[in-house]
Length: 456
Image (tube, rainbow, N blue to C red; front, side, top):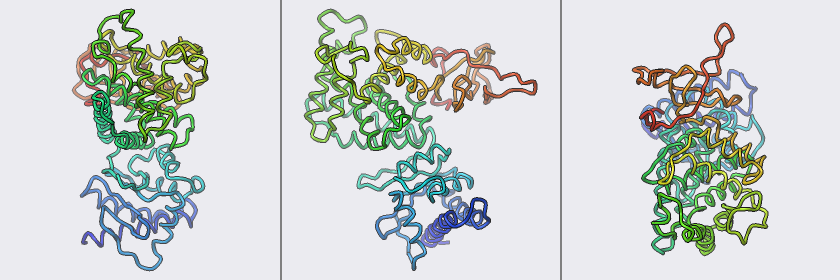
């Protein structure tokens, strides 16, 4: 079968399966037959390529950059269904199963809700556990689709970190930074936050000493967008929150390095200089024509506290906006769990306890509670010790019990590396009703000489 015919067959099977979803009740044999045929076509394609992108541009249908011939009205229904959701791109990735494909088609066909935007559809796909099908819109700056899972998250994260570094260095040199590149990085991060939040959040737990400034910028942005989505903030505004979060500390690019990286306590004269970064950041961002005003506001406010303390002192009597409050939490959370020249990193559970101590003073009580729920007690990528003494990495969070994640056990109770690591669901019970071993504490990966990325 030649490539053109393969594309024709695949797109027609997609149209038939989508149409069957709309015509027949769940479980009808016509649905199963059409989904199976589409699944076979996708499997054949994804055997040769890691991904498959189907684009819909006006009257054109493109499969992996090649147009598909259309005849009659066969594809009209498919185009109409996608147009209702403002979807003009569907990406499929290797590893796609028939059940996952069926779940995706039910959502796209509108079985799980009425017509709405592609962001809402993408959110539903994520909630349904669909990881190998994504939807979106096509822009002039379209980028290569990223594979699902940790490897795709790493690519997007590292790209965002390089963009943050370039933005920072350009600003420090006194040159106008590229705001559009920053927006593009945020769009990539926002998509992964929607499609695969656990993988991206796992990357924020890593401690990179050599690039703290840029990883901190990206981490605060990722955490802010994850919390904003959990609060029901509209997708477009989530990206604005993410951009503001990425820029929250940009004023420090104007701070002398000897003060910024000082290992000891700042002197009386140095404190006002470091505090100046909130004003410098706001002024810098306000002058950029393509930067939303929210970014300047957050840069100015992110060290103000809920109890009206903090700095800049002249701005204390003011009501903080939601983005500022989330960024302030994400900023402190990420800073405390990361090694700095002047102190060691703290375990994630200790950081959460410290945040809780400032409940109602530095942070809004309701927001703090939701924040802790989103970041998790033991997030994916955390190294933990169980009550049996073994050590493992968290690979999955239980949706209802944050104290009992899934753990990949790496070290035995004596601290020796296992030849064959194994998965343990700490929420499961044995035949007598007794719970599996429980997590007792989070530990620093460096203490036990493990690299979370390789373990994941």
